[in-house]
Length: 242
Ligand code: FE
Image (cartoon, rainbow, N blue to C red; front, top):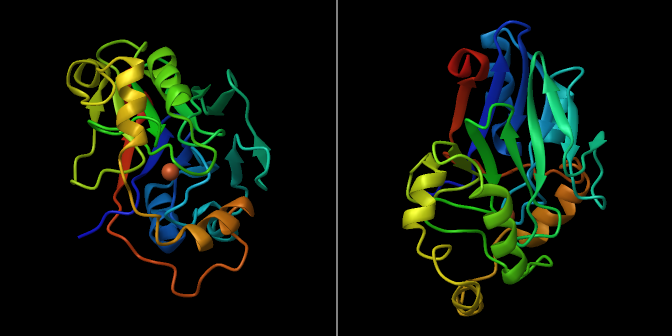
């Protein structure tokens, strides 16, 4: 099984407002069904960055769930809302802080929950790894600085949810990654050397995904948009944290 992406749905139980992070177009119907089933109002569809390996679901979700707005940092993308470093994405009484974490791409962000109990790192920090830096304007030294200053500086107990995990893992923590990440526990020089010698293949869907994602995923949506077994994790944010 190949997991293309992990999607997260956060809701404030009191107001029943919700946000979804990194939805995938092939799973938009499933996600809309979950939103309706839970009886929440999806306020924002957030993208951590312009994905190269799948088409975002925010464009399709807008057609399924009236009132949802698409959100991204990357200025070159079409979206209803462009966020900046330090912005708050509010849902009910809860909010996510936007932290600019470039390096995998120049427009990558990490969304940090208001009480810093959890953060959604996109491809900046993966479980025991990190996003590649060899295309889409990537920069290994920039990624090293972003992860250390904006993610690993969070409280040790902060849970970290990445955009992908190809081994089926779903969550890690700041303390785990500070101790165990095989790349980011190295010096900056060693990290850059590792990243420069990964020898990875070009993503199969990059020529479809990037142009589509620059259009919020609504440009020429492939009829056979790939299904994945990407999971959707539901987090009752307020209930968990308060
Ligand atoms: Fe990516």
